[in-house]
Amino acid sequence: MADTEPFPLRRERWMNRAHARMAALSRPATAFTSQPEPKSLGRFARGRQICAGNFLFAGHLVEAPETAIWDLPQVSPAFDRALHGFSWLDDLAAVGDAAAATRARAWTHGWILRYGRGSGAGWTPDLTGQRLIRWINHAVMLLNGVDPGASRRFFRAMAQQTTFLARRWKAAPVGLPRFEALGGLIYAGLALTGRERYVPAACRALGRECAAQIDSGGGIPSRAPEELMEIFVLLAWTAGALRASDIDPADEHLAALDRIAPTLRALRHADGALARFHGGGRGAEGRLDQALAEAGVRGPKAEGDAMGYARLGYGRTSLILDAAPPPDEAHSADAHASTLAMELTSGRRPLIVNCGSGKSFGDKWRRAGRATPSHSTLAIDGYSSSRLGVTGLISGEKAELLTDAPRDVRIERRHTRRSTGLIAGHDGYRRTHGLTHVRQIHLSDDGRGIKGEDVLATIERSDERRFDAALDRTGLRGIPFRVRFHLHPDVDAELDLGGSAVSLVLKSGEVWVFRHTGAAEMLLEPSVYLEDGRLAPRATRQIVLSSAAVDYATRVSWTLAKAKDTPDAVRDLSREDLAALV
Image 1 (cartoon, rainbow, N blue to C red):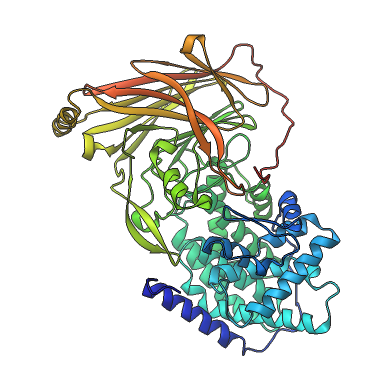
Image 2 (cartoon, rainbow, N blue to C red):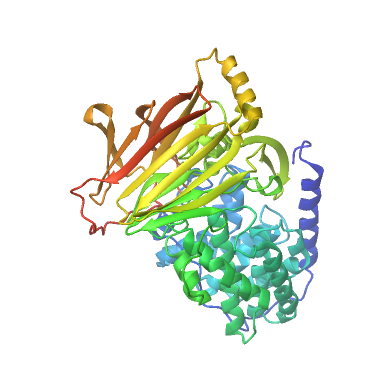
């Protein structure tokens, strides 16, 4: 490794490798005592791509037909981590034919021969946990037809990795990586002969992590909906595996499932997908539904705010707004400057979105995706509501953390006879410009119309002085700002009525019309939609309302409503494969 690599990272890598080699001396397992029913879901289309030699991981595509996965070039650390986590086994299992099974066996046994003595990028607690769960899930496919020597090596490798996890799970970063390490340890302890002794201590540790990391409202410090879903999935899987072995999960484990489930239900749009905030995506289709059924946690979604997000929903329409401060600095490696940003879905069709996380497309896209202009909210030109500043070491990698973020974020629910809504504000521009952003949104009780207003205003005398100074720097021309509404790529948008409205046509056939009032110019501009599993960002468009703050209060009002001839219910059966390469 380069000499510039931080010492803590070099030390952690050395400790992992040393413990991996010592674990190889442990007594090998010889068979399964039990085998949990496979839970991990793969994507058929992605499995077919892998079989064809198209390896798309972490935003990098390597085209290498008839090449073993471990002979691929080292494109990036994230690419290597994706390979060593073995999520691709789920995709090959989803294909399920002889060719896919042959590749799964050859590449898994190839990993044992090449990296089984402690080398390679895969010897971290979280990746080892991911890998063990998938080896156990797909053991029938991986052992079918192999010779006795390969079978013995397979069980020896699993025993070695289980011992490694028992020694190193505490080194996993707090959050999802630690849950992955403990989940893998419990799975392996339940499944392998001679490893049952690890289960009680691992269950107690998992209970402690649940109590420490899942707050009373069912949220996590990163405030990322997709990360919360992945933690819930792991907890549901391990609870099911423990019950199948007649072992009661820890009380804290079960209580965490009960707290998380209502929160996740509140963070889902009308199409069943998660809101895309703070580095998270929509979530793999069917994954959350399966976990909710597995956990057996019934009941409605959380009332009020869920993990700092406010949800409005009527009929076929759902709106989710980021209504809390960003994660604190220590948990902000993937956090976005998204305060008061919104997403809107109609039926099964996303309409207003945030650009999403660009981390799978490289550092430049990652930074761009985290900025306020990449979200559907107001941003003062040249500024985000939070700034990227301090560089820290998170999960063994350098990461830019959010600094100078809003800390006074307030929300109040507003109800009228025919609508429900909210008014929220944040102080992210108060230090730089003396301005507070206030956003008011109302959703009609039939789900067919949204009324919104964005205001930049001074609150106190000191704010007025700061605003006057900022205004002087512009030569009294005003402080320029823009209110953005990023559209999903499947939305067809056109300026209408002489530029005074934007018509938005969904694939379902629904038509929505966007209008505004106030001293603002409305334009349709290019935008991007960033989602994992694609080779490049998808081109899309955004509605932009441009104006300038020249007074102590400047407001822009807007409406979004279904066209009058759009029916209340639309038969919408078409589906897209989100894993398609573009």
